[in-house]
Image (cartoon, rainbow, N blue to C red; front, top):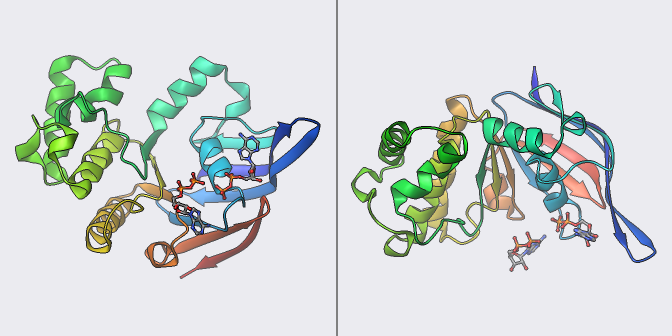
Length: 226
Ligand code: ADP
Ligand code: ADP
């Protein structure tokens, strides 16, 4: 079944007396195990869509079902719980905590999920190994290259074994060779069953995704599938 379902979703922002319809009736399903690029010009609603998908915000109207749960039926605490359980986030600027080690950064979501220190340290070591940073567990982000930092962020996003990875311009701060390595990693994770939803404005990056959704003025302009 669909891991994500949007049904006539609207998101409005009030700007003084004006109402901006950042999303203006978006209906779609993302199937489990699919890989999507979300594209579109600046201001078309990509960030708004990602914030909604990420449960950082709620629809003004319409329904968003994540793993069958309607986010509008949840209070803030339950919504955070849903986010922690089902979603992993990857950002353009990595968003690692500079004071924490690689291990500490990967462990962070597990801390919020209430894992023991012992279990989360073991999980972090396993994930660091998976992303090729098994020897760097004690390093701080500043001591790593951009590509290595993004691999830590991928490991962090995987910590809770989420159904869905949400990636916001994941290669935007990387040179093209390093960016390709991150895309290869996302493609591998997708082959292993993760649903990957990636916002990008770079067509070359989007071509890595077999499904591409183009936004325009808060609506779906078109969909391409390989
Ligand atoms: P936002 O804050 O809207 O997510 P970003 O910070 O991700 O934008 O943008 C990163 C860089 O990409 C910036 O230099 C921005 O000007 C550029 N950019 C963002 N969207 C587009 C677009 N649709 N077309 C071209 N360049 C873009
Ligand atoms: P994109 O990510 O494709 O650049 P956004 O989702 O950021 O598009 O923006 C969609 C529309 O909503 C734009 O017109 C933008 O100005 C508006 N918008 C986004 N966030 C806010 C906000 N917090 N308050 C008011 N308007 C917003």
